[in-house]
Length: 157
Image (cartoon, rainbow, N blue to C red):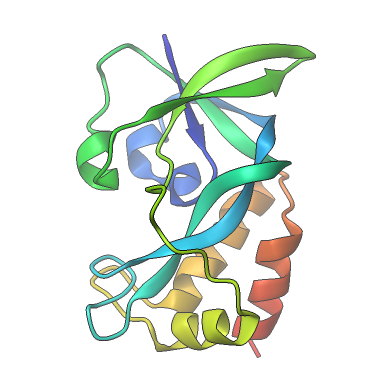
């Protein structure tokens, strides 16, 4: 089995819906809006800030167990999965995760982030819908993230 760590849109992705998943703690990484999506939730004219994991802190995510080589997620994510260490029931385990490129910029300014999300519209939906879907998926897995809650409060006004 291969562990795939889902911390953003993969939490609700149909490609993983049939596999066993559980909420886990990820030490050493935290969610941030990193880089931008110009196809699914945004466009070249109005890119959508996208969630990613960056070094520091900790967060909760979902660990899915997949049979080896049963995933086409690399195509969807556009990047190779990298190994991460995470806590699971008091022990450390390795999983694969699709982390943002090290050169992807972090959206540091909250006002720019909210403006970007409100302007974004892509082939799948808008930036507001992206954040709403993230919050909904996290609620289903009983995961909370203060960053996403704060951003959602601003975006849905």
